Amino acid sequence: MKYIRNFCIIAHIDHGKSTLADRLLEVTNTISERDAQEQVLDNMDLERERGITIKSHAIQMDYVYKGETYTLNLIDTPGHVDFSYEVSRSIAACEGALLIVDATQGIQAQTISNLYLAIEHDLEIIPVLNKMDLPSAMPEEVKDQIVELIGCKREDILEASGKTGLGVDKILETIVEKVPSPKGSPDAPLQALIFDSVFNSFRGIIAYFKVVNGVIRKGDKVKFVNTKKEYEADEVGILRLDMIPRDLVGTGDVGYIISGIKTSKEVKVGDTITHTLNPCEKAISGFEDVKPMVFAGIYPIDTEDYEELRASMEKLQLNDASLTYEPESSLALGFGFRCGFLGLLHMEIIQERLDREFDMSVITTTPNVSYVCYTKKQERIVVNNPTDLPDPSKIDYIEEPYIHAQIITNAEYIGPIMSLCIGKRGILKSQTYMTGNRVEVTFEMPLGEIVFDFYDKLKSISKGYASFDYHVIGYRESKLAKLDILLNGEPVDALSALIHTSNAYEFGKKICEKLKELIPRQQFDVAIQAAIGSKVIARETVKAVRKDVTAKCYGGDISRKRKLLEKQKKGKKRMKQVGNVEVPQKAFLAVLKLND
Image (cartoon, rainbow, N blue to C red):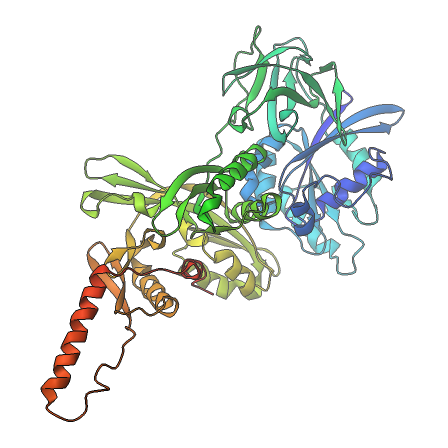
């Protein structure tokens, strides 16, 4: 055990951690030149194209230092805020962390939040300044930021470049010297932490784990503590570029287990594996079910593809356990699914994967968050869809989720960012100058306000220089109302929204104006109304297509013309009673892009 080192890499998006991981694998000869490619650990096409890590990856390296061979287990973690639970479980499986900071950009918001996670787990932090080969690097300024943030000595900060391989040997030496070896007892009952799982179409679900106490052997009867399921370990082994089977995985080591598990619900990240016959006394702490934060409806463009979409969603869930979905139907869009996502990036990735991997074209409804409604009888109802809201007369109050948002930016953009956040009902909590021109502002704001277009606006205001990170802090009472859109008095369920009363009038007016442009004219007047309860707050009318019935009537008394017009009026009225309005598909899509 004293020759094992488990470490992870924490960094903001695009600070070069996947490239640096490539260099570590090359220097330790873990991958041959034939297998070498950019971003070795990012094995999804989407990850490579966008240059982001979506799934955690683990890989084992051997490193010879002072005549001894050390086993280094690297657990690569996603940098994006949407995957922070996965990051926290990966950190729990390590004893040390490389904190990678881009020498051209300095410290960003997600670096700080992931760093706090690592400090909570008492990890040994090794600061690394990456991208030192770039002419725009500012090593001295960024070193000041790192020293201020983690209180280390300036000479402890390693300089490196993932591109040229500068300083990679020094990083490996520092890992061996500074990261403590795992603590645990090989003789204690088995206790292993699951930090990730992947789906293989031939072998079922493969769980990645770190053994905290005890050993796991091939053929052992094992039990997953939180799901209470029991299996036989058909195969256990270690993770190199491919999986290498072993007869046993010992204390402190990282490995995988294959036991023919078919459904993703049976393997949960953060769960504990133990032996059936000699179980451990308690599970490893920190396990929680991943809670979706943003909800949206996903519908097939062609209603005949519903079954195909269901099969695609099942396969996707095997690969991504944090996706939740349930069937729902809408009068306007037919049958589809109500899906829960960890955040907006997660939602975008799921949409993209449905399109690429399963060739499914889908419509996604407006993203919203889940609210908690308390009735006058003090019943608690969780509302994921505005249509689930009870009758307004029965509602006592509604609570919505609030977040603690952390924005780091250049001082010159602070004014517009403040007004953006305050416009989204944000409450300023603190504003601190980290260095001369870098400011950190923290706000408390409703999650519902940021799911629409907040991130895009923040990026355009700050010309891409602001980094944003958030975590949910709980629910608070708010003045919310359900906004219904009515066409000729009939509510359209797919367009209804839960909205704060201060924004309701403006939002309702915008939707009505947009729909007026998009709904084709009929033989009768179409009234488009936005209403809260029974009170109409905005209205637009699509005028009827009219035929000039008085064209052939010339001369004579006025009553002849009036008679023809009265006859037409009756016909229009009768038509309105039997006619219904077809809402074109593009109207639903346009409402999603209201603020463009």
